[in-house]
Length: 390
Image 1 (tube, rainbow, N blue to C red):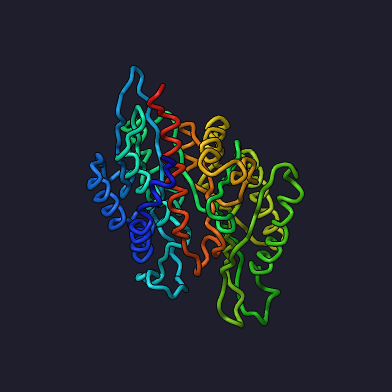
Image 2: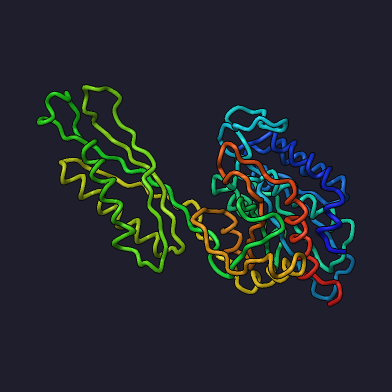
């Protein structure tokens, strides 16, 4: 039977699971209730459970019918954390925790991996081992490396690892993937400008960091436009400026902050170098000084071509070739599953979430009709990669 159809039989139950998670969001490394529920449900399925990887991470282990002479193992990953965001939805399963919500669909991702786990545990139509990787703190960009620091792939070796993410605007039952970069590397930055404040009525005796900051914001817009090849997409966004609060005081300091996105480490480093130079020299032109704190959160998420092709083939076998985009354009969003793909071959696929609000919007909600399609493709890639027939 098509795994999607088998999983859809339990959609009502999975919808209730997902909505319970949505109503009780937890931020990165705080997913104690979520991870406890995951572990309890896995144990109820007869699945071996390991807790505490990366703090609140959970790993389930399912062994297939046969072991063969050279057993293989596959990792399936879902993220569990919510966002520090105030939900504006008024439905019955809206967040019960002020200032926190599942605004990215990780409640759906967790439910889909649980649904895939149940199907695989019941059918065991594979030869080898499946490792179910329930990961904390994806939104912080540090949950994946935290699990790796705790020996994830040493304790639970994987020949390949797969993950998915819902995509608003893509019809439910559709998939998108490509054989290379799927998501950008992400960096956050702070620029601290030091001047000499004073009375706003006497600017001539100050060294105004506000004017320096304004000039620097404009200058930073040239970094990508005039330094990065048009064939290597990158984004530099100044998203905030913190400085004085009084109408009649020129402050001593200004803080600029924002994000950089790029699809290669080389471009990211080029942008960093140019930002450092501009910050120093523009500030100097206004008799101020400046320092850059540039922090890479996640590397680019780059699919391994063979694994991406196999996952696209699996999706096409489930829903038909017409509902699979094998050349989906990369996104400037980030994803710490990139760390797993640096350690183990694998692929990351998008699944349609229908006509919902965009990710990270306070009115977003995961589309429960997508659960069988996400769980189904995860189960199907296991059955293909660990085929019991050979």
